[in-house]
Amino acid sequence: MSEEQKKPPVRPKPAAKKVEQKPLPPSPKQPVVDELVALLRRNFGESAIVEGYINQPNDHLPTILISREKWLEILTFLRNEESLHFTYLQNASAIDYETHLEVVYHLHDLNRKERIAVKVKLDREHAVLPSASSLFAAANWNEREMYDLMGIQFTDHPELKRILLPDDWVGHPLRKDYEAFDEGV
Amino acid sequence: MIRTEEMLLNVGPQHPSTHGVLRLLVKVDGERIVETEPVIGYLHRGTEKLAEDLTYTQIIPYTDRMDYLSAMTNNYAVVHATEKLMGLEIPERAEFLRVIVMELNRVASHLVWMGTYLLDIGAMSPFLYAFRDREQILDLFNELCGARLTYNYMRVGGVKWDAPKDWIGKVDHFVSYMQKQMKEYHQLVTGNEIFIQRTKGIGVYDQETAINFALSGANLRVTGLNWDLRKDAPYSIYEQFTFDVPVGEVGDLYQKYLCRMKEIDESLKIVAQAVANFPSEGKIMGKVPRVLRVPEGEVYVGIESPRGELGCHIVSKGKDKPWRIKFRRPSFYNLQILPTLLKDENLSNLVAILGGIDIVLGEVDG
Image (cartoon, rainbow over all chains, first blue to last red; front, side, top):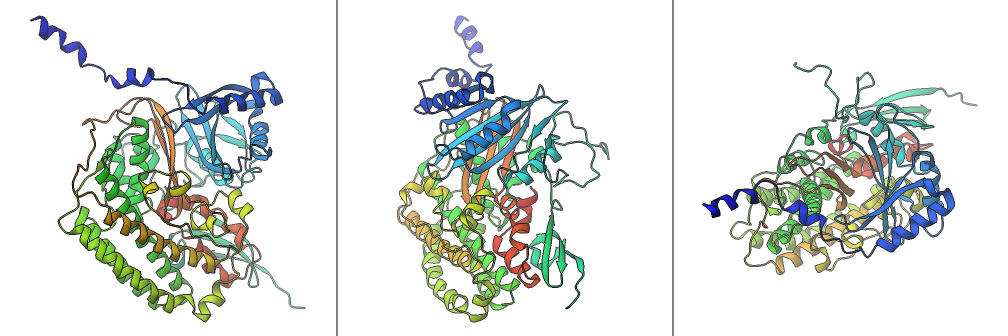
């Protein structure tokens, strides 16, 4: 009896989650992100960077969360500063977390082979962000895609209109509360 | 003084040289292109939205339909990102099979590009040669996984099917056959006077522009930058193989052609090494739970597809389905430079420059 009673509690939730939390030896990249955060805070004020951390499962990717007000200034700095030189826009994604939206740009310096992810949080109702298309030519279509599918307004974008969906489409499909206009057909 | 008038020319969406459903609105002044506006989205199927309601294994066949000329690398992108987030170990035999099929797929994809590109600029026969040889690769894939284009071959943790009896031998035979064929292609095309006239010094751009537009693959390497994710951000077992990364110098169409032809040589080299060292036995699937629950987190990985950097960005909330999945589709990035390249070009170069980018519309539209 007692053995049988012991067994059930082992099953319910996968143990993997807890194991994932525990092993947190400091990442070899930790100094990189610490240095970068310090540098950015020196230049743009303490509040410019919300946090900086290492995304360990993703090959120790340095990730920094930027405040919305300083987004474009910091992107300009990351791109143009001689010692950083993140000129290659590797990827641009937007994520709907239901409480807020998040925009992620993965930047790459092809010479040093360094990668970085920069994030910014946006309000769902008032999703406005300055466009980075003047910095990265590649951002142009990516921001149009984010506008089209996620409903993020990019100010000062040269041509902010839908890119994948028809111009008369209603709504932004990648939002979690999106309902298809012709549902039930 | 000849008076000219601007005219709006509509190319596509149904046009043999747009390689799918791409529409170009071209403003021309005489034969000079003033402005080009690509209109895309005709093939948009909402893969990213659909994937939010699918389990990780169910997403794999959807990726087949993005870049349908190289479905193996698409399979790998999503599988690799998931494995990274889960921290899975992949059996060696599975990794070898993956590398073999991905590199064969690269050869097949480049052959299609070469054939259709030459068709675009007026050479009929290379197309037939290229498709004849590509057919052999498709036959090999058909034998391996039962499909010619949409393979659905890879799984999180390994591959679905083991190599049938004698399959590795057939691959080996194909590699030596294809290496011989490459000489034929060079005799047929590479020195052709008309081909050189149509491509040399056309569609030139420099390295800085390429990086600014985040081009990848041969489109980036043709400017002289040695950048190949198989070497610069190694994944799978590519570190075990010796191969070169062909780069160009000037960044014109002719060198793009040479780059891609050399890439075929290099891929064949990799396949030959993989066949020679292929583990005689072993598992093809790692230890994977039946229902995949991916731990909470976020991952972005890029791999080198025939068209460039194919990335997969997964945000997981610890469920069996991704919270958000985003594909960095290389054709989408590479196509963006087209209006810049076409500005002030002669209209006759439009098809040559567009073809040189090597787009797949299924991938552009996602």
